[in-house]
Image (cartoon, rainbow, N blue to C red):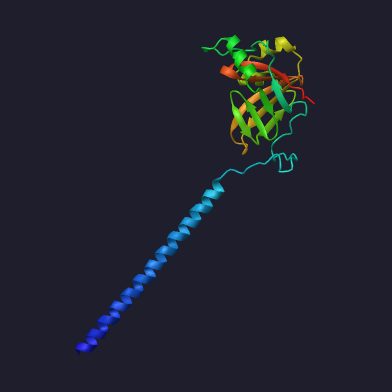
Length: 203
């Protein structure tokens, strides 16, 4: 009787051990599977990257993005003796100092691989939305007083609005205006509005 009872105890202990091992293995599998699902969810939540210039330098415009007018692509800068187009309401910086700082900056780069201004910084592989022949009201909508600006260029000036988004096309970084294909109106140093002209390539 004692041997039978002992054997039963051993069998019970063995069964319990096997059950513990199976439960432990199942828990490990569930944890690793859950981690894998979480990683997949993180991958799906990442924004889609819109590459606009490939490794060979070929232009690829993302779906929903617009081609920049050829006359707009390149570097833009203000003249050394430029004047302010519009000043912010509250500023501790003089117009003279703002012009000096903006003149000494790198100006504006408007390209498919990068957009750059002194105020915004660099936006790599930007997503552009372009609207030709737009209404002056769109300038007013971003805080630029179109009446004062168009006094310099004429009421019949051709205005092109360019919105600059990040790679995903979701976040708006800047809005600039090109007037008559020759003047770029933008917010720069100290939130002053400047008038830049295209920098001619040398060589």
